[in-house]
Length: 277
Image (cartoon, rainbow, N blue to C red; front, side):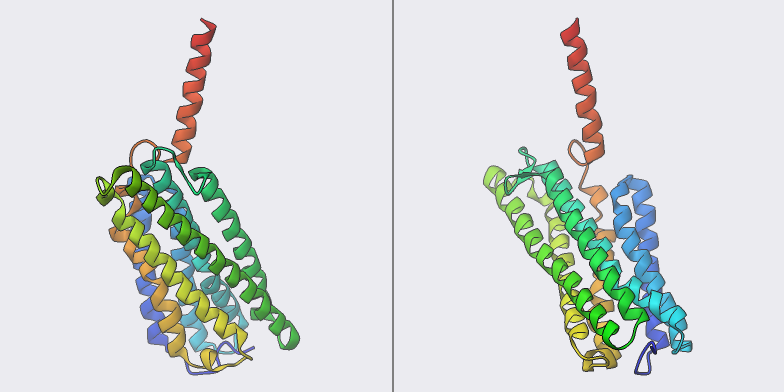
C-alpha cells in the first residue's frame, strides 16, 4: 500500500520532528534533574512521536516504501498511549500527595493508577494489533485492522471519561477539606492534565473518524487534517509539562509510590523490632 494518496509536505514533517525532538530532549534532562523516573512514559511518547515524523520525512521521498510507512504509522498512532499513561500516573501521585486520605472515588491512589494504566495497556495492545493490520494488509484485512484500531481508540476515549471524573473528584475533595488554601501548589499541573486529556481526546476522535471511512477517505486524503488534528494537538501534551513539570509539584511525602513503599516497610521493620524488645 502506498504511504499516502496525496502529496505530503516534507517541510511540515521536518518541522514537527524538530519540535517533538526538542521538547523530548528537555524532558529527558528534567527527568534526570528531578529524579521523577515515571516521567519516562512521557519521554517514550515523545520519542515515538519524534521517530514517527522522522520516518515520515523519509516516507515523503519514498512514497511506495512500506519500510518507512508501516513503522511511521504504528509509532504516531501509538505514541499518545504513552502520554496517557503519564497523565494517569501523575493524577495518582497528585491524589497521594495532597489528599490526607490518599484516595478518591473510594479507591486508593495507587489502585487508581494501576486501574488506569492497565486500561491504557489494553488500549495500547488493541491499537497496536489494529495498526499492524493497517500497515501491512490490503482489502478485507485492512478493513479489519481499521475496526480493531477504532476499538482501541474507543477504549482510550472511555478511559479518559473516567479519568476526567476522577480528576474533578480529586479537586472537589481537596477544596472541601482545605478550601482554596494550598491549591495553588498543584492547580496548574492539574489543569495541564485536563488540557492533555482534551488534546488526546480530539486526536482520538479524529483517528476514529478517519479509520471509519473507506480508504482513502476525505480525512486521509487531506494532509491538513492530519497536522491540524494529530500533530498540533499532541505537541502541547509535551510542551506544557516542560513548563509545569511534575518535579516542581510532586515533592515530599506521598510524591513517590516507590519511596512510600520503602518507608512503610522500614517503619514496619522498626515496629516489629520494638515489639520484640
